[in-house]
Length: 366
Image 1 (tube, helix red, strand yellow):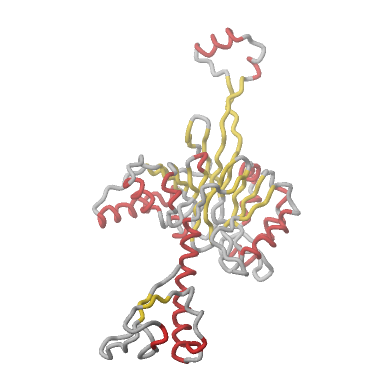
Image 2 (cartoon, rainbow, N blue to C red; image 1 turned 45 degrees about the vertical axis):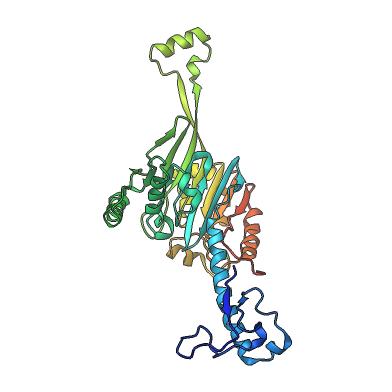
């Protein structure tokens, strides 16, 4: 990003406050009375006479600091907008999103028109019809009012939002406050979906929550594909006989659920040891958090904060049956290189393809 500041050869009015920590600029910047444009990108390339002037050097440092701060903020905004259309291809699904520990988490799967958590409401999330909230921390739920309001602005149909039952009432209050403050309609369907319950997203896709362990109430979600299979006792029958049974109201098929995608949200690694969560660990794609990656933090440190350490995933890797693992929610203290190096440790322990979601993280070389 560039910032442009007009500079004049004539001395500034002493009664006018100046942005710069010096009283006047030498005429070498430009011709008499003509404004010049100064940018953070070209500021350092001065004539030797200018570089030798301490006032100009001071100005250079001052503006460079401003430029660096602005460019860093812009980099983060671009990363948020993130949610790139091409996404990451895993298990036959394009997965998009951003997940930085303590800052924002929103994982989008366009195939199911859904987002897991909403973060600060990245643009691509607005076009998803379903949002699955894992828990009520702001980096996961903060953008919910904006999501609903923006869908209304775009004349999109009211979305369906799934929440743990224990926070449903508070979410309703949150929207009541925004309706009152903004004098606007905020329309949506709010579903309190508990662990063990099933909700049909469409005739061939259902979702079920599973239990997770965070510092506040939380739950993960598994999305299943649904197919029907003829019951064994009717396999020997001919087509007309099967059709006759079907018309008479007899249930001739079994429903087969296949776990496609599992999302943990924030949790300790304990979810991996719960036999009731077996479907999450055998989903085609397991999207799990890995907040801490190295020896600088112990597994106990992670547990106390309701998070998972990569070392715990490695320790319990034998239980994972997924074809692909997407690691998310890394602490912002890590660089892209730190993350990729750590992921190699897990990759050697599982047959699944392991991919880190590094959108928004900086390279140590940048």
